[in-house]
Image (cartoon, rainbow, N blue to C red; front, side, top):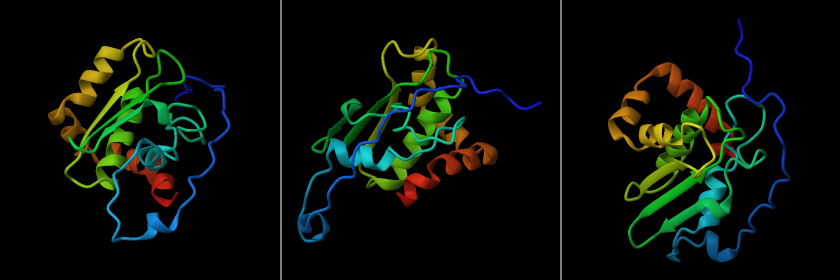
Length: 158
C-alpha cells in the first residue's frame, strides 16, 4: 500500500529570481565571503520528498532563515515544514545538511533546524538533526542515502 502524502495539497509560491552572476563572481582571484543568498541558492532546488516541487516552491526554505558567519565558519539554516505534523521533516533537514556539506568547504559547521513553532515534534527533530552520531548512522543507510540523493539531484544541477 502506497503512503499518502501528509499534505496532499500544499501551497506553491512564486520562485525568487536567479542571482545575477557578475564578472567578480567568476574571478577565482577575488576572495569573497559566502552570503545568505549563496547558501539559499545551494538549497533552493532541493526536491520535497513527497511532491514534485522544490523546497523553495513550498517556502520550506527562505533566504531570511539562513545565518552565515564567515569568521566562525558556521552556517545555520532554519526550515519550515508545510504542515505542523510533517513526517518528512527529518528527511528534509538531512537533505539540506547533506547538500551543504557537499557544496561548502569542509571548514564550515552546518546546523539545520526546524523553525521555532513550525512543527509538532520540533524538539525531537532538532535533536535528531544535531546528533552527529545519528546523522552519521542515517547516512550509512543506503536506502536513506538514495532518497536524499534523489531530493538533492536537481539542487546539484541548479
